[in-house]
Length: 200
Image (tube, rainbow, N blue to C red; front, side, top):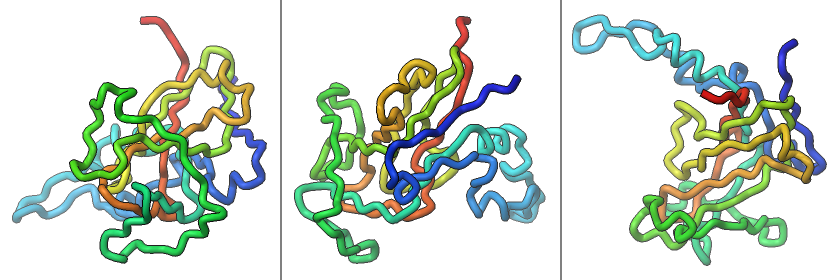
């Protein structure tokens, strides 16, 4: 019998903000278009598209996808670098993030020197994942989806036991830039990999 992961939600806004999708159904466009062999400086060479491990990794588990544009205020004021991503934000509907100060990690996270906030942002996806007994999930930064604005904290959640609250799909990320930015709709924010706990 194949184990099953359940994505449950108690929040009617869940699909408006975040959506879980099977990784095999959501791959980068550049990956789908990539050829197995290319001409590189006059010689035919293989690309990573020929590597079975890359295909396995890109199709493993699930992604939590942003289903709308999500503005992130990195500082006290909205600080758009050049207007290229600037957007109007309705302060009444803007969700204030909890945070994890850098001091909680002994200041080991590498932030941009002039970053106004040296914290990790914490947002709720409002999804509660449930796995069979003995199964957990691993949260990782989505593999091969290029993102220059933020990186996701990685970690394990025992979703067979820690699933009685409203959500266990907390997304914790830290900025890679020193300004406000937008997470565009369609961006995979988090990769979720279910696995069976075993002692080695």
